[in-house]
Image (cartoon, rainbow, N blue to C red; front, side, top):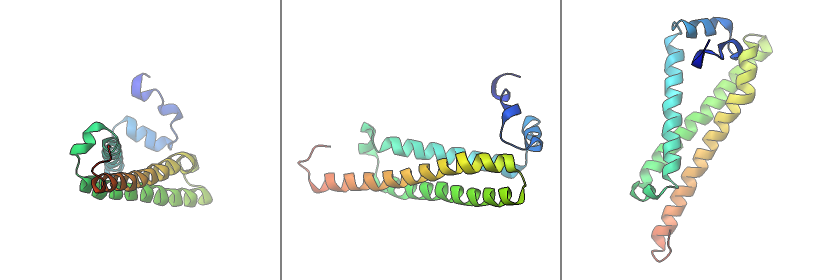
Length: 139
């Protein structure tokens, strides 16, 4: 096996899900969930970068305020919902390998990521409001 398929044997997924991913027969919800997560992550990264890069001056503050907040909320919601589902799976013994991996790696990552996006939104809005209140102060 080469490339992107090389790690399938150690992927923290049930064998049935690995087989479906290999044969491209995964459930539509699985593909959609991955695609939505990817789009949200990319949008959040670009908006977070926009708050600290020079081109942020052309970025309206409302875009950051009303985009990063929902993104952060969705990421925190993903962490909480998936984490609680993982706990349920671990307690019942279902999909323990996947649940363990998600509970201790991915759910905390999404939680921290979402919280940092919220902090970025707050910080950016405050900086913009402070710089607009004091026109003599350089950015």
